[in-house]
Image 1: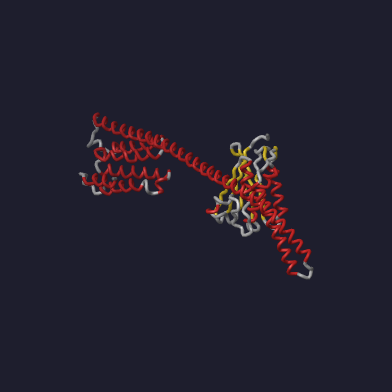
Image 2 (image 1 turned 45 degrees about the vertical axis):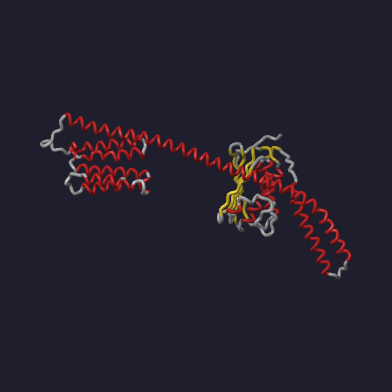
Length: 398
């Protein structure tokens, strides 16, 4: 529309001045480029655009008759632009500047050739008042529009947050349902496996005692059987731990002490992981009720996973803070990160990306956190690391 309107202005022009059409097209170009060029969308760029419009309009009016020019209405372009883009004070300043630009042509009149009578002064001041009215009305409407836009954005952000919370809740429910079903299956399977495993191990021991010591192949095979039975029995034990209902022993405990014990367990139990653990505990967190032993296991598992993923010489950060009656514990590593397609499944039992993993560590962690009425989340990006966040409600011991 802008090119069409300015083409009509140029076509209907009766002024013989050669700069009239170029100035009109300059204004048209500036009016079209202003919302599209990034530099004009900044505060300084917006001021520059309004000043350029004032300059081009001043030259156009000056070259086409000054006060007698019909283009005086084009001064509304910078007035409206300023009123739309800036606040009341800036809008008032640019409106006054536009009025001053127009009134400056009075000073350029030759008193010996031109004289302004009372009726013409009345018309002049009427135009100035119209500029002020347009600027004020436009700024008021723009302010209302900006306020409405802020409200819409706030509502949109609240809806987005509600959708995220709903998605997390749905994922937690699905995970709980899967945990319940797999827990029952694991419990039944583990009980069924215990008896034959015991029989197999006892048979291997009898076999080892029966055959002679010189039968190295038989002794080696019996040893393999016994070792694999122990390994399978350990796996069955972990299945039972996962399936067994938790009995929380709630007590008022200092969270920092529990995390410190998990860090110490990591450093003493796995010295081959060459990582540094940094602690950033919030002093605002009071002692609150939770199961210290089970929670220590949560933090140890998260720290162990972070240590296994972190290259030698790397660092892990444990950070705590109080958020709206909930304690947030973040375990942060700067390792390789987790593939996005695995994020939804990492808390599912038997899901693992490790060659020798069972896939129950994070499932048990999630179960312990859920039993406390909390939740656990993960954020990860390939090549940058992962952040596991545990949220525990601050509650008094029963």
